[in-house]
Amino acid sequence: MQFNSIWVGIQIKTKKDMKRQIKKWTYRLTATVLLLVGLLLIIILNPILTYANKTTHKNFTIYHNKPIDSLLFSSLESAAMLLTTSDFYNNNLKLDICLNDGSLYPSIIKAIQGQAFAWGFYNKVVIYGKINCKKNFVQLNGYHWNLIQLLAHEMIHCVQYDRLGLIKSNPIANIPNWKWEGYAEYISRQNTNQKSLISNIDHQNQTDINSWELTFEDNTITPRAYYNYWILTQYCLDIKKMSYQTLLTDSTSEQSYKEEMMNWYNTKKSKTNTLDLRSIGD
Ligand SMILES: [Zn+2]
Image 1: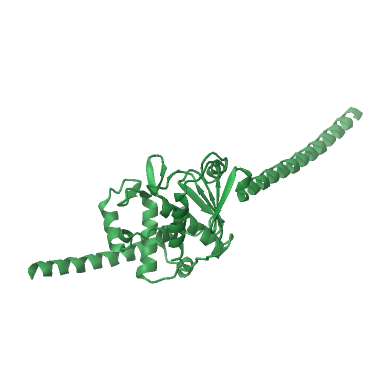
Image 2: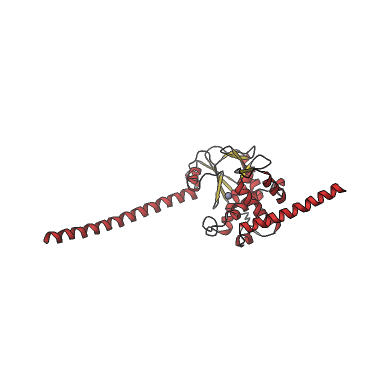
């Protein structure tokens, strides 16, 4: 009897000890995770911690390990010029440009965000692919992306953060990709041969639907999904004359706009074809 009560006593004590131990380790683990997340955040917000050099040019601070190609300055300026067409443009916005030339920084961002030609968040543009300023492209996995347009695309994400704030930006706000990425493509794709929505839809219709990418005239590419986001945003802003802010708050579905855009396109095409036939008749 006495033995039993001692045994129960030990069991209760052991259970209490275990609970205390679990609590202790939970606190320690939480503290360690918070510390690591904090450290990571400090590194992400302060690229200089992982780069050997920084060079300032106008509103840009470029972080790099190796000497910079001086042509990069004019590429950055050309990209910044494209931004001025955005309703969200702020000429006081200062941006950090982080190059992939030996620093750990791009690999850290890649580990968090996944593989990409580049990323744009907060006030940072991180270029992961290999830059060729002279030929104006960034190379990744054998694909080329137009350098100036890529810079402008990522800068627009920074402009979105600047105007909307962190909470109302992606990923927290969960803005549909076609509006978030579509706008970055819309502002960056401003070459003369990218301005006509009819021609852009024509180009989409002429490509192999199974290919991952679409190729522009300068032999640079964009993923098909981004191309689709781009032309839909172009339809809303250029044809329907919506502001980007209105588009963000609009609740019409992506599918509805797709159908509406294709109806608009088919009507335009049939009118053009009728006119063509008439001119042949003349
Ligand atoms: Zn993007």
